[in-house]
Amino acid sequence: MARADEARGARTCGMHSERAPEHFDVVIGGGGLAGQALARQLRRELPEARVAVIERQARPLPAAAHKVGESSVELSSNYFSVVLGLDTYLRTHHYLKNGLRFYPGGGHTLPLEQRTEIGPPELAKVPSFQLDRGRLEGDLRAMNVADGVTLLEGHSVKDVTLASDGADDHLVHIEAHDGTTRTLRAGWFVDATGRRALLKTKLGLKTPSGHLANASWWRVKGRVDVADLVPASEAWWHNRDREHNRWYSTVHFMGTGYWLWYIPLAPGPGGEAHTSIGIVVHDEFHPFDTIRTFERSLAWVAKHEPLCHAQIKDLPAEDFLCLKHYSHGSTRCFSADRWSLIGDAGVFADPFYSPGSDFIAVANSFTTELLKARLRGGDTTEMAEMADRFDRFYRKMFAATIEIYRDSGPVLGNPRVMAAKVYWDDFTYWSFLCQYFFRRIYKLPAAEHGRFEALADQFGALQRRAQLLLSQWARRAVPGEADLPRPVHVKVPTIPSILANLHLDLAREMSPDEVHAFMQEKLAWTEEVLDELVLRALAALGPAQGADLAAAVGLAEWPRRPSPERLAAQVAEGGQRRRSLSPIARDMDRSLGRMELHPQATPLPGLVELAFSAPARAVASPTPAI
Image (tube, rainbow, N blue to C red; front, side, top):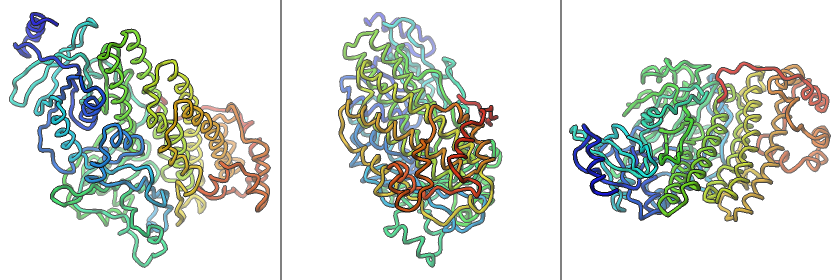
């Protein structure tokens, strides 16, 4: 745009500024984790781009800043370590994470050592991290400024005037803390304003996710160690963790419709560690009102997890925050009109399994590819197709992810079903989504990307069936000894196992053709895992409840059922049974234990035939599907 046009653009801002707006190729509205990570990614992958970040809060940021999202998993850890080049930094200044650890069966006053423990038996070979968000975001700001990013701290984005013509720039109106205003010209605008969701609100893109849950959380100084909940005299329990790595996990204390977390945060320059403590409750079982203040949250912990309450009740909270109905969607996140929604400004599913940073990683990477296409002479039509493709894939990813959480409340309190869910969720996550990101499949041209999107649709269809099955299984589990917690360690993943190999395969370099063949094979395995879940649910519930489950999930309309060979193997004995089982069935037996049979669940073939002939019926869900 010519200088005269710049002046005209400034005048049209009226109240905002009278000087010619400064031009940037991309303006990022919001300098939290999503915005700062994108700025770093752009400097690394698109160094010619002029990048500005607008952030309301000025440095210095407090240690253990009060932000949810400290726990990363494999996909986001690959993004931070490899894409952003932060591996050495993360290993030096943050904790390596010991996976996800679950103690379902809350609501009972059992000692912790008498509850089922679900989690890895040792530190993972493919790393993930526990992140002190205050330190990470502060350090990212310093790195970005050193790399040439224009960081306007102490400024807020007040409004964005989107270009009405594709050849024009957007006008980003910002205000400093002292009330002075100015306007920036942006070839591309990225909304990273968090739950304020400036652009999503302005364009009317908000949509409910169908998942109604709430959270409260706070930070305390020092280390809160799960091992301290079990007396030293219970050596058999402590000996499961000879290297004392349990506390590096994200620890979940769980019951029907809730979970309580402990997350360790590494010591900062002052040498003091912190622990993040939080509660998540599903509306159907626990009203938001029960956790909406710190005092009520502590009272809630006293009622549902009394051992944890005794451990944390006298630890002063350094902060406290709560969110009602934190999950939300969007009808669009990437547009050929040159804008993107990243982080909480776009979509947010749930803190369970820590997917928030995964969505940041994918959204930032999609935005980077779009900006490359724009700034490096890409065809306008091609860029529009890319924006549509990324937007479609991202929202499908969100739809599949939300199914993991939307009706999971009943599962959280059932140790047997929860263990099966963790196996399934790990299996599908490592088989498709992680491989999609680790191998940078999103960088492929449309003609090559299409076959991976088709696989995503197939995995998504299996996801919907599996999550419905797990929820309805848990809803029908008859309270009794079989469904109480057992003092066992369910090692997910067991080492060695097919599931553990899937995790190790994340470090394996593959070509796009090899990745596609890998995913096709794992899709077939995933179908078999779902068959095994069906058998486990029917066997545990018995004829009456099994038939009711079958009707609720519409088993008769499912495209496949367990094979006759699989059913015959189940009734075999000893070595013959083991040899007759498929590798997947043996792996699930080793990981989850032998299939538990209801007293009336035999003969199993007849039970399965009855279930798959049960007419489907609609089941009322506490929340609508998206």
